[in-house]
Image 1 (tube, rainbow, N blue to C red):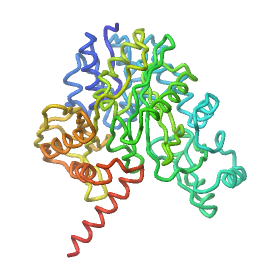
Image 2 (cartoon, rainbow, N blue to C red; image 1 turned 30 degrees about the vertical axis):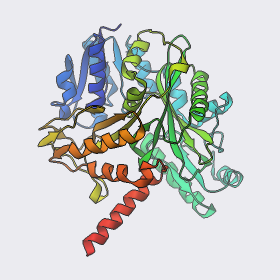
Image 3 (cartoon, one colour; image 1 turned 180 degrees about the vertical axis):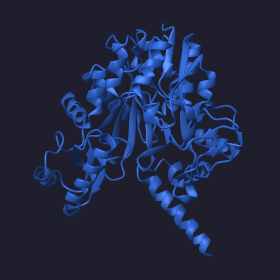
Image 4 (cartoon, rainbow, N blue to C red; image 1 turned 180 degrees about the horizontal axis):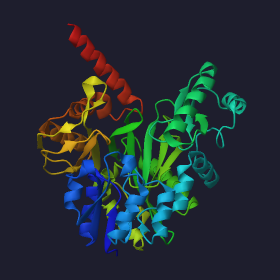
Length: 458
């Protein structure tokens, strides 16, 4: 096992990794920007190194500074968490060049799965269902028009190097095609430095289902069921569930087997997630693979009784998985609400500031993953998520009830937040019935905004 791990991240995921290392008897090195000097992950690590000023490009994304911190602190390994450099193949390679163990998949796997068009081609060859579309990047506008006629409308244009909704356009008819193509390429180039795009059939209001995977260095790959991630706003997940309210045991076996097959196609090692779109007729299609731990990993942990972060570290250190897929069945239900410093009444604008008072709910089946505390300042430099509230129950109804109770107990003063929005979602009859897709939150937010506008005019 490692003697010391440097965590190349910040906030709640950095703290989560520190706790896992502590349980494994591993020393930890936190990195931080000048804005995060007082963050909880800095206080809890055995050592901490400032890697730059507040902007991420000068600190959490500054590879030379992070590698220098790892070398000077004599770390054995680097855990990248999620976001930032976690899916950068070049960073993984640089770590290896400096004799640092990368806690994640190899650079080759990251590179293959990071190229959305290449990933789709690999999955198609492996026999994993894929959405009908182009076999790779669209070469020019003439090819685009020909492919669009073949696939049919509506269709989706996506950035090859994309994520988070950047470089993505829904095209409803021929009149929108060329304009949408040009806008998507411009946005992709600005966001990723790569303006290549591909197209595929657009599936209206699907479910977003992802499969949690673990693979070791000995060829063993096991999945831990699905997470329901359809509740999204602007292509960002807001609430996640495990298991999905619409996935049967038979369908779970089909999707899980497809995910394992896809992971084997790239000799996948460590934690990863394969995401699928689930159509209303229970057909499912490969969407993408995330070659890292996910924000929403706690719901899987609560249902399947596994510490995924500890498993990541152990696999990187050479541990072999216990390969018995038949024992990996959901025995409970868990829900995660992402709490953000934002104003739901003002188009969810970010709300940085100082948390002057905070009360965290507790009780059986409640988990709180966060790096904030009373007096903590939420910086405008980083993502607005400041915590994840997780509720576990023997069944879905109990998990919902516990989450609603916990949300009602939680008090945060000093910033705007989205607790009331979560309560609206969980109390919605459609959500309680499990009848929702990826467009659900957009419609709910629009309805709530219309209700507020009507109320203000009375």
